Length: 483
Image (tube, rainbow, N blue to C red; front, side):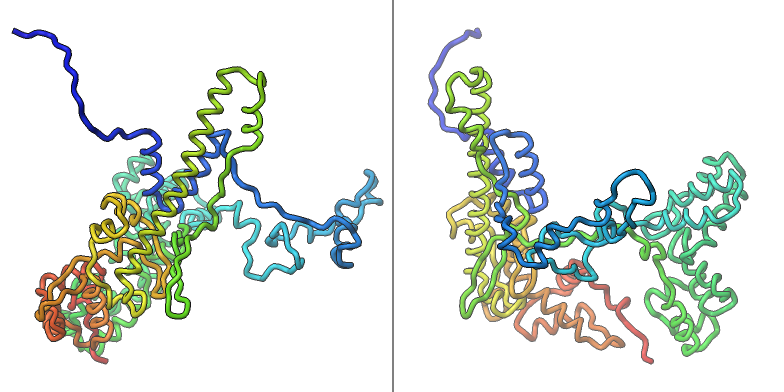
């Protein structure tokens, strides 16, 4: 029989408050995401504002230099225009509208360097492959159907310039025959850059050779029917199957090497996102100095105006005061979370510097095995906290820029009972391959034997795995023919 009862029970559990969730979220954000989060919080919380740096500017003409005073007093020609009579209109000073970079403030009134960014770099979109192709099509006398088909084809090119749509798709879009669709494809393929609108690398290379008038050459035949052998640089087999000598095959390969396998890459308008370090590690004398990168991050503070408004009696309704008090608590917690995030990053970097000092002194080849637990125990934090801190965070070191995750590496036992980091082994493999003879590249088995000579026991399949992780081609693709 079921019955209802009331019982008292004592239990301990962790409650994730909204403030704690916010602190954890801020901890795992990268630098770009953190900047966006700060701006979003400033917009949402009226008690939170950005600290605006004050700038003392001389206003007494006696304190200004002669040239600087003259620049302040004299107005530009364009502001001296008076009246509506064209005869009274002064000549326009087009320097006022020059495409130059305006720093907005300069103590020295220096002329910006020639390579400074243009004003239009911030307001215009860089033209890409589609813009270049459509511009060429506008100068061609096309009927309505060809215009629709060619624009559809241009819209179906990927970033490399390859056509992703089938002839059937193009014909269905234009409600036309497949011959008309193929004609539109040939029309786009006649545009620059050569090789555009090919279905794959093979067709793109053939189009480029056709543009050069090399349809009846050995190079055309190699790409058309022996591309797989060309990829493995098996020139002897190509010579046997084409009935040519190896010397002629090598001459044909030199022609092929001048072609562009991805014709659309040259016109890519994708922006390059550069890594901005979260922390800098400098070597000063015999010691290392850690400095957090706060450049570009807005400095936050509690609004003094709203704080004064809260202290005034009968200045607003109780609901408004309650809202401001809650906003003030949230703002204080947010600022505290940001400071805690920066302190945690500093502590983790300090611990990494202690464990991996040989790396900072001598380079990647001296990276030691390290796991999250080692750093977590050292700084008195949980492993998950260390994991969040090191994800998508970068450090600028004397050896280069590395993600903080890079400093953690599994241990590989050596034959003399010592251990070495997996990243250190990858560095050795990279150096072996960089110094190899291109005509006799090192196989994975040979690299494994070379590591064994350094008392590092690594199986051939492990070498292959590390090589793939470093995006290094296998031996058959690295081999070059003797000249």
